[in-house]
Image (cartoon, rainbow, N blue to C red; front, side, top):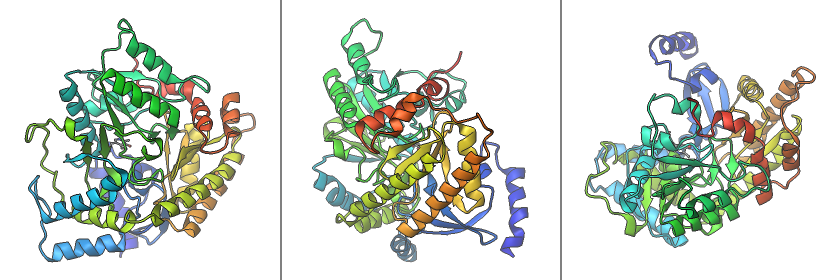
Length: 472
Ligand SMILES: Cc1ncc(COP(=O)(O)O)c(C=O)c1O
């Protein structure tokens, strides 16, 4: 009896699994099956999944076409593991990636299959940029998240993660992300000034590494103008522009690559999470051909040839990216999401909607409040996580394929939970938000100014939480 076994099944995790586990503490159930945007636990209880594998399930759970292709692959003894050997499945994936992603966007990249995590692909990017330029330093930004292996962690801002290794995390200069210093301050000015000043103390960078929307950092959106300036600064300073599209890529912001609307062409692009389409481990580093200076095997890893991931990734590209229907659908859903989240923000004094595309959430001003909302949602059948330096952003990462009806249903749960939790706040404990945040809330959703002003919201708190500044 599955349902009856639930409690016992839970005990084994407490008894045997490392204390490092985290999501399962927030979503305290034993999960069993999943389809589309819905997961079921062993007791048969259903939850809407707006965590989507932290952005690894942009096409939902167990897409039927990917599943059928995978079953067919298994049944004809297709290779599951192939190091970096040439294989029929890798060939099919690369052909689809070339014809459906690169060529239509006039992008010319070599594809490196790294070890299967985002962090490993970031490691490869930083290593390669250093090799290409012969420089050590990398510019990364406040509130950035690039993974937790040492090289990637050096570029990650979050203190909780940075203190873990008890080691210096060298080779990175932290600069303020767009909006970090408040509305009206263009943080690219500071970078330009420091790059141009031989006595600024900023060593010439091998790379400027950024997310166009900072996912873990609290759904901070870089404006088009800022991104273009940073791209130009990378070019003029001889640094490689590296876009970490691990979370914002694969359609999450509305286009396949998050940087497409801005007319910038990064030198290196990091992809992982949803690239396999099915939640299978896979990561890529895209390299402009002139920078593909690796020696054979110089950055290697045993699990670079996941045959199952190649199969599902190829189906994902063919199914969703061959025409424009999917992007049109995602754009419509993103508008719906923005409108509904504005209602949620209205339920908390000073709260603001953040993010872009289907990568949005609401900054409710405190981690306690955001966490209480998330807990209440879970009790009511909706899973969503929190983000930001103080976990103060309730984050919606619904699968991009979520039918409107389910999206609305989940957002109804979120709205009701937010109203309930906000009403329980003691009088006078209104969450946060100074005048800047209130001003930001009045900006049209998605406007560049809104992006900048809204990010100002967390600035002071960011200095303590995820700025990249580690206490002595
Ligand atoms: C932007 C970004 N880069 C890198 C990573 C690290 O990916 P992984 O957890 O697969 O190592 C993440 C994970 O959330 C991410 O959001």
